[in-house]
Image 1 (cartoon, helix red, strand yellow):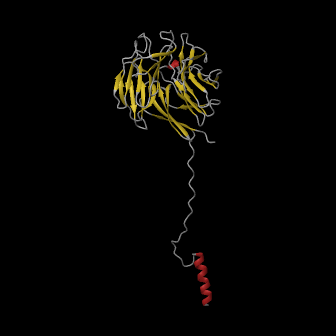
Image 2 (cartoon, one colour):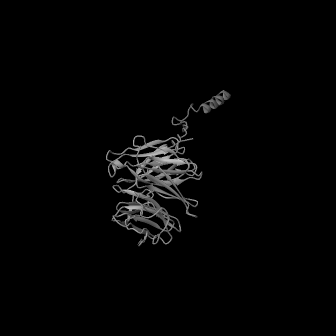
Image 3 (cartoon, one colour):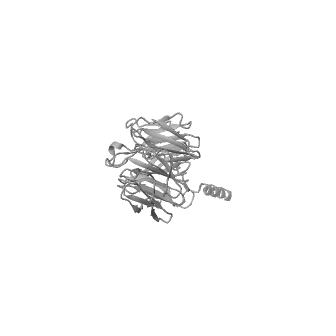
Length: 360
């Protein structure tokens, strides 16, 4: 009998149901959490200065500066929720550049362009410059190195070695009847590239060897009327340009060119700038319809993940009266997953975009 009771106790203890507490419960096994989905596509965030025409965006002194039709603004906030007006101008800021210690901007009033220098402590200095013999020849674009300030006029490329006071013509000529060399300049090794539009609204691209001032000119890369707006070279020796009519690329220093993007719905859409990330061969650009200048238009961003072979378009779906034409682009950061940038709009302020690379 004793042995039977002992055996029964063991069985009950094992089953935990004989004479045990009614409150005994088993601990459930928690399922493993689902991994966060990898973002894809693009996100947009309004970043301030609504109603301003953002002609230029530059990095300077750990901040972002925006050149507009009404003045110079600065944001040191990563979310771009706060902008401080650094300077008020009587004419639109038409050109901007910065090196590690100075920022320069030019305005283009009815007559002689004004030129201003901004120091690290935000001290503004008006420069009494001698850019061109004629007061009617404006400064259309600026490019900064640590020792030299480059500027373009109607057709001329000039350099200043004294912070914009005196200028020396390096290529082209003063007083030429042209619409202006308005493209953002690009320096690769000793070659400086610049461009814009000629006298008959023809696109012009030029390359100057800064050692011997030898020049090469490239004509009719886009069908006229057109203009060159941005120029960049890659580590593979490619040259990429954008302008009125899309984007083009050359792999042989300008001997031959291939159109890598064109909006077939709006063939003369302006592309003022673009971003190229070398590690992923990603091109990002956005356009502006001239026919809707200072008027509402949608915001589209065009992206290629293979150097311009295939493209996809993203739309910032805002109201019908949104001012989404893009005049300037500025890369902020990039990593293995995404690239972030700022878009400067025509009367629409600033928008931050984050593009996520497709999964491999």
